[in-house]
Image (cartoon, rainbow, N blue to C red):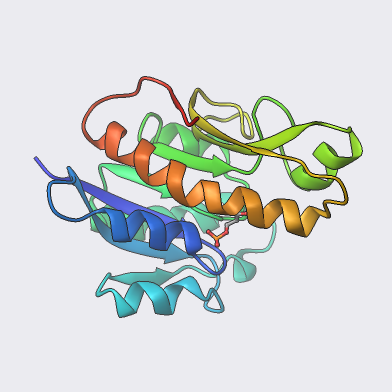
Length: 197
Ligand code: GRF
């Protein structure tokens, strides 16, 4: 049975595009919704150009009331009946209630070699620490921020003179390879770990 995938974005959606463009042919999943917390997300137009239903639930009117914002998210998600949810540059912290509602069905890509550098500014942290390498991780989403089971990682070297932007671009290219591979496996029922060479 083809798995229905909803993708949550907040920005340009390059990871969303990689996931969507891979979901063809014998892929066990298909995208059914691209949902953003802001109408300004550039990824919305890319999704529409690919014929995918889009929706916006602006978080700003809800202020600090995360639960009310997430209730609206759930209304839109429930209508799409996703089997899996992929967070792809979705920049809102989700409450334990929302994560529990979708426990086991939600994946995220984080731009660090977890468990190192949870949260923001991962590339600056890796450079400042003098690490030899950086990378990205796809993990199951749990109530602990960036804390769920890691399903796969991809690594890149940190080069002399690297800025956070240069490193981010190098990591992003690997995100676009890793995330589709992991989604394809999870949609086929395989949650074993896959680390890219
Ligand atoms: C990427 O840097 C990713 O690591 C992080 O948010 C950014 C998403 O970029 N989760 P895009 O919107 O997928 O292009």
